[in-house]
Image 1 (cartoon, one colour):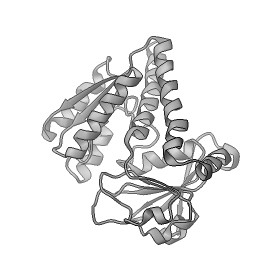
Image 2: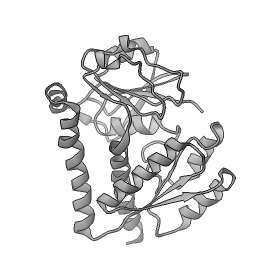
Image 3: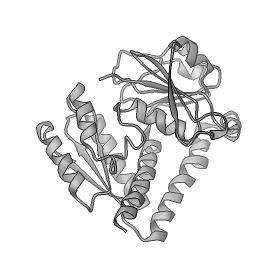
Image 4: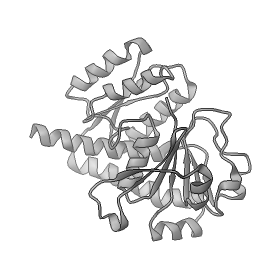
Length: 268
């Protein structure tokens, strides 16, 4: 399994201003809280109960903590969340059952399960109409779905793995209906210094992104359960987020709501 590091190097002018002017705790109140309130109000106003099922088939304490955080956040916004624990050998069958269960609107799996290409296979077992994690792209566990989500929301994204760097974008002024992916010959040293936001997702405690590559004031977000930034990251980063927490869960809830509407349009 290849693990990717994603760099969003184009964000809106208003967000650039907020990044320079506000501390991270205030940004969370101004951006995350209103977003979650909007989700909650939408669900309550429509009187719906979208259901998300999470599968935990490993003994990773970080995955369990993430699942518990997911359950808490979903309860706060009105999403029905169910955590299903199973042996990894039974996971495929359990996913297939969830695919066929009409009451389940979204599915997520807490990776790694096997820690190899079998995880990629399992990701593709999830019905695309219920996959809250790979809503836009399913070829990788984390990197490509995240790159696609950011690009579709207007970002210019450099997605990096051991095989090279790809650029995701929707063109100037969002002229494209969906993101396009272009292979590049760029190196890590080329893209990090020009990126306003750097998101790492390497599941290895030995990997550290050099602080020296970050541009002054960049936003550094650690997407991995392992610490991917050096200890001195705050010397260069304007905002440092050591763990993904509620932000990612809120994005999963947004995806769940979109999938719910898609499913209802098919049955209605």
